[in-house]
Length: 376
Image 1 (cartoon, rainbow, N blue to C red):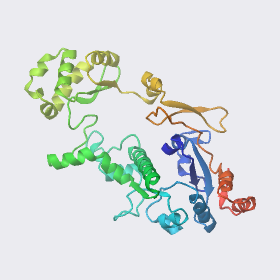
Image 2 (image 1 turned 90 degrees about the vertical axis):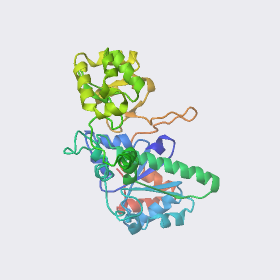
Image 3 (image 1 turned 45 degrees about the horizontal axis):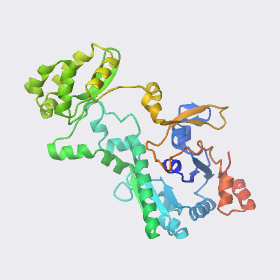
Image 4 (image 1 turned 120 degrees about the vertical axis):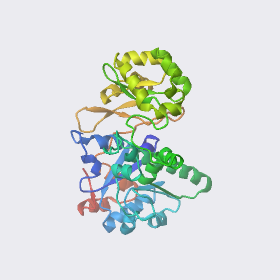
């Protein structure tokens, strides 16, 4: 998706029996699943049975004309299919071969499958998420899946730049597990410095206080104070200057140590007025604060609208139904990113892709007739 928004022609190779599993993950609007719509705009789709010799030949011919080959199988699977890096590089020596797996390209778990939630557990993210050690909680968004895609795109772009300079293609390897370890980086160093494991702290932060969610008279908000200047501004805004002289709160280290007492005092105050009051007050005193918004509130957030972060996209075959999807979260002044097309129907572009890579009309008809490829 990232590469497609940046202008690449991305060809998605899908199973002939139902296409990408993500298509069937709800909720649905007509035939379109929410997960699939978010991640597959701008791609073309061909459905092929790559386990058959004719399907393998199709992929090799496709790879011969491509800049990048991206695969997301568990370790060793593509070698079984005859589509591993040596096979692909034999038809295109300068291709960039990108492999994104659960556990990486080597090691004892190389062959194991894995998903976002499993890797959140394996990498330690679940151990520091939630309200306590007896209630393991995964992050509410797919940080491992999305993060891994970002690292993979970055690696591919770096490999493209190198090939422009040297003419050589290379392998780009990443994994969900490596992404999880990278996201855990602060907590892994914490363990080494503190000599104990970090624990779940709800919305609080291991290193700062007050830095947490609080309940107001009509909702919830997040307050983040990361230094002494901010704490002084907080106390001034709340007219609680005596907290500045309290031995428990004199420094950030002490405030972290006495977090429960400090948060209890703040919570008592915050329940007295609605969220909007506190946000306005803290904005006036330059204290970092944010309302805790639900999805419907985010969709109409004035800051989001000012950034034009959502793009309106029509869904094929849905009688004009449209959906707003987030654009890539950066802007390029000279070459702006663009959602070039809605997500594809499974196999929608099969005939045109086969024609582009040199199949004759008779060969194309044979691929469809024999079940190697399938059109919608």
